[in-house]
Length: 127
Image (cartoon, rainbow, N blue to C red; front, side, top):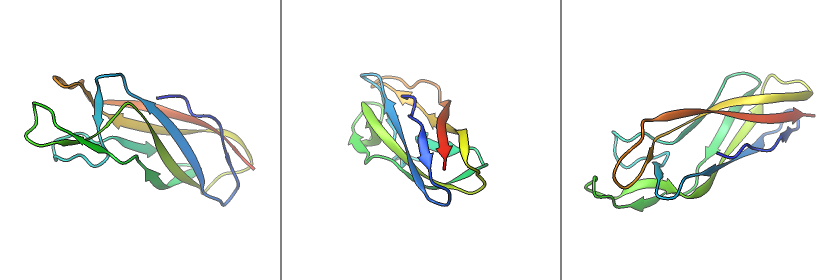
């Protein structure tokens, strides 16, 4: 994941935070809507506090067939963007850091790595 730039919020207005995700060549992650119940979805969540998530927009997944699965899987590959629309709820003017978590499981065509959760830190300014 590429570190996001500072986001500017206007009090009482929803703002979009864009997170750029870059996957290594040859790897994929399950989409936020995996095609099988046992697959770990890509999921972005935010710590409760000054902001709450109004909406999380994932890219449109594509379906790929892998030898280990009977049917095509709903995945993301390459570089893509997740957009979180956040609403300030308990925030005053000034600077801060939004804290979130991105959970995923990266896989190649032959094996999956253990699931991982990485911290997302988004600098912000509220006016």
